[in-house]
Length: 304
Image (tube, rainbow, N blue to C red):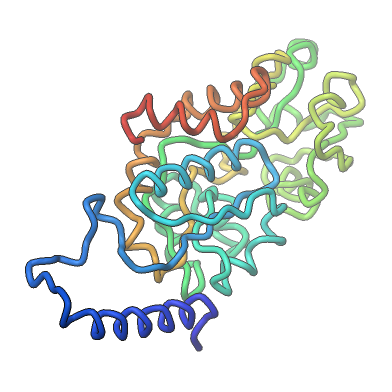
């Protein structure tokens, strides 16, 4: 079945052919290759880019957008959509073409029973798990994955450095986004893999504040969150792989993957774990816009 975007492209193509036929008597260039100087596709399709309602994800999406625009593509932004359950239908039906995702969490979305945990295994399994019409480009060295954190004071008082060290500590409350309660790495995963019993509190955006205030004892925080450093938190080691390796990865409509791969793969290769934290600091501490952060990052990495 043709998507609305495909039907529009066919209609535009038919119109263009008719126009060329009428203009053929006036002028022609038999040596023309049909490509522009940037190497971008010359059709009139627009690359629709989405992002989560999460500042770090929006920054990456804006980097994708500006990189593609710099290469001659038309881009439409649909940012701050929400969490995975809200935006995946738009990717699956072709309404959105490109989205910054995270390998481990995306794999668990499609395959909750996966046994893959390492970087390469997760990436390979993800490719197999995706539905028809979706694919991923190169994964980035940058990670922004779930992690469990405690305050430095709690870690010292309880001699805690690993998730398993929480076993046997009574009265633990785990805080995080509401969906964490049902995730494989949530309370059930803590119990099954590490023998840790917790109550759950849906703290969402206030998770770190609640942790520092002592209202929860364990917090689910993304590993690239600057608050881990600024609030003196301790990220607990995960030797048994409760959390899957989760690298930044472009999730794309298979129909446009080849067109944009060179541009987006170059972005992914340049995005490092330390670099992603630095971008997040610019957003949260320096209060810079995603647009300005992306523009400077692309220039600094010779990608503009």
